[in-house]
Length: 380
Image (tube, rainbow, N blue to C red):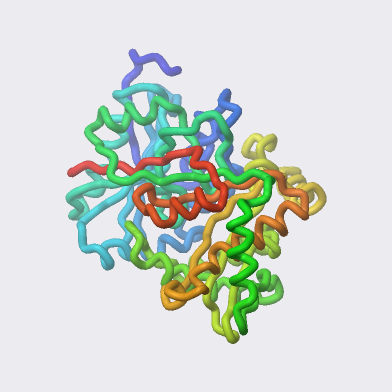
C-alpha cells in the first residue's frame, strides 16, 4: 500500500494510456483473492471508450484515477445515461468501476470527484455502482465472497461496503445471484415443463448462429417488453444489440440460448453464456501475444464447466395462460442440454431482492440464493 504521507490526487483519465491503467487497476486490486475474476485488460479498455462501447451513444462518462505519489490507489467512473433520464426524469447520475485500497480518504475523494462531475451536469443524486449501466455490471458484492464471480458479474473485497456507507451512501436495492447444481430440478418443475411443451403451435429453438443479428433483435424485443416494469430498467438499443452479436459470435453456445415461438410469433427467450471468467482466469489480463489464441481454443476445445443464466423472460401477453410456464420450460431445457454437454454448475443472475414472484420461482426450480449485490445512492 502507498504511504499515507504522500499527497492524494484524484485526476480525470486522459488518453488511451491512462484508460489502460484504469482497466488494469481493476485486475490488480484483486490479486491475492482467488475468487476475483476479470476479463482481459484490453476487453475492459475497449468497453471504456466511445468507439468501443455503444452505450456512449446515449451516455456520457468521465473516468478518474486516485494516486499517492506515482502509485494508483483507486479508480471510479461518473456517468449520465440519457435513456435513463428520459424514462425516469429523476436527475440521477451514476458511478461505477469503483475500486480502491482499504483507505477511507481515497474512497471519499473518488466518490466526491464523481459526485462533483454529476452535479456540474445538473444531477441531484448519484447511484451505483453501475459499470456503465444496469444492463452491464452492476452492484457491490455484500454477501457471498467465498466463490468466484461469473462472467459480467462483479467481485470486490468485503471492506468496500464500509468505504461506501461511510461516505454517506445508503443501500436502495439488493440484487440476488442464484446457484444451480447438476442435480435434476424437482419433479414438480419437470412436470410443468413437460406440460407446457405440449402446447399447440409451440416451438423452442436454439440461437441461429447464421442469423445471430436477427435472433438478437428478437431477444431484445422480448427483453424490452418483459423487463419494462422492472426497477431501473433501461431498454437495450439496436447498436448495443449489434455489439452483443459480435461478442456472441466468439463465445456463445447456441444450445444455451433459446427462443420460444407460438404459431411463429416470439413469446419468450432465455440466454445463458459459458463462464469465460473460468477460461481466462490464468491469462493475467493479457491477450497478447497468445492470450486470444488460448482463450478461443479453450472455448472450443475445452469449454468451461460453468455457465451463467443471464436472461429468462416471457412476453407479458403470454403470462396469463399456461404459457406463463414458458420460463420453467426454457430453464429445464437449458438444464438438460447443458449437463448433457458436460457443464457442471450454473449461476442465474441477477434478480431484484423484492421481486417475490421471481425469487419464489427460482427457489421452486431448485436454485440457491448465494450472493447479494447492493446498489447505493446519495444526494449530491
